[in-house]
Amino acid sequence: MADDSEFLSRLISFGLSEKEAQVYLHLLKYGPKPPTLLAKSLKTYREDVYRTLTVLIDKGMVNPSLDSPTVYAAVDLGIALETAFKKHETELREMEMKKLELQELSRQQRFSQSDEFATYKILKNVKDVMTMSITLLNSSEGEFLACVNEVASVIADLFGINEAGKAFVDRGGKIRCITDISYSHIELVQRQLDIGYDIRHFSQYSGIMFLVFDRKNSISGINVDVRRMSLDEPVSALWSDDSTYANYLVSTFELLWEQAVPAAQRIEELLKQGTLDI
Image (cartoon, rainbow, N blue to C red; front, side):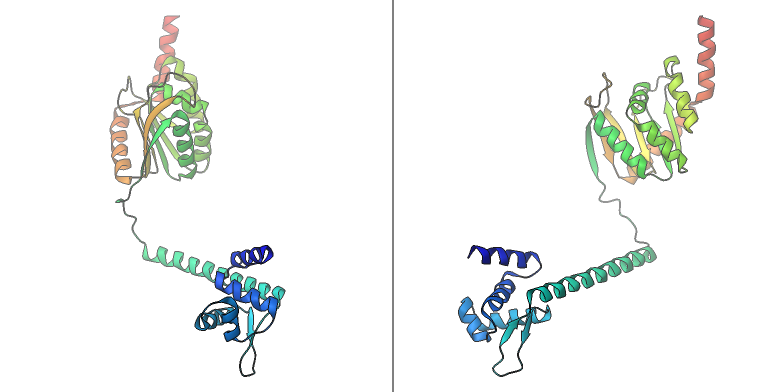
């Protein structure tokens, strides 16, 4: 009985229903039978057995006799499983073709993407922000905008944003960044400029910090008072794929960009000031 249960379970996992597996196993064990005797042996209705036999014939697992009354015999297990396997392969190929056809029709129709179902998520620590930022930057194709303070720039450099930024620039992306450049910040900013960042200085910027990826996804700071350079440091930031909100942040960025000073100019001023101080 235990062996029967295991065998039935394997047949079901191969794509048969429970009733189909029971009928096929019974015919396999006890030989050809007419529907009436099958129904009696399996303690079910004859009509139910007829329906099940019809499905099994279609699956190539049962053959009817040409005699009258008709008896039904199980096809050899190896042959039956191979037939079922090939049928699955055919179905998968057909599904793949239909998928390609639907994708092509979708491109031809140019279905519009609704902003009604935008997604929002709270990022709760530095690790969440860095992971999401790198993921979005790796999938971006056009432009990455960043409006951050000096501390956020240092954290981004420590935890891999600049490596992802370099790869983004190398594949043709454009990065613009607004930050508050101090004397201690010069070396980092210079590395970013060498990568290909376009950076401007906004003195003592105290507004919201945010990142925008291809004008679609955004990460904006809610509470980013970072005191330790640690991935576990708690912060509160909002990620969203709401393109309307992303474009609002882009508009804010462009206003700040017009008021900001090119990084090279700011660095020159700081270096001169440093020389005077000495």
